[in-house]
Length: 94
Image (cartoon, rainbow, N blue to C red; front, side, top):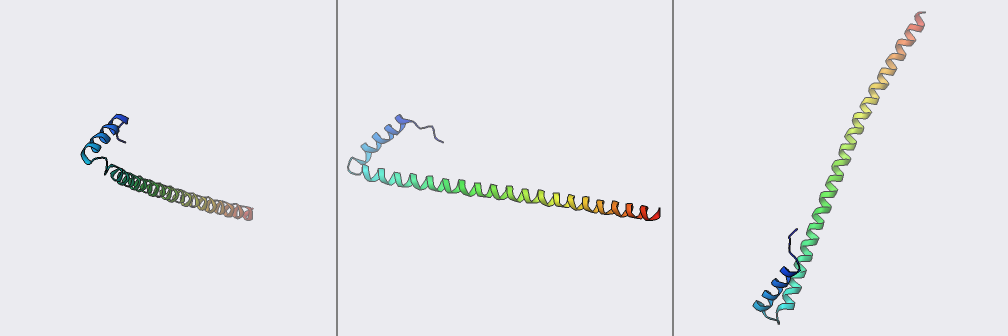
């Protein structure tokens, strides 16, 4: 996501250590860790929700295709019945 490497984190750590001092540094690091964890969980939840929505859309699309196929099958059945009726009528006329 961000292109931050080891040296950038080290520089941020040194600057933070100079500004806040060694006494408050562990508390700030814990707070930062908590917030990073919350952000990661939030992003993971969003990704899960998006994945579920995509699966639901795929399922709806699949059901629509099945409905269209069932309509085609009904047309085939109706056509077969009509042809059978014509066949029976012609056989009776002979």
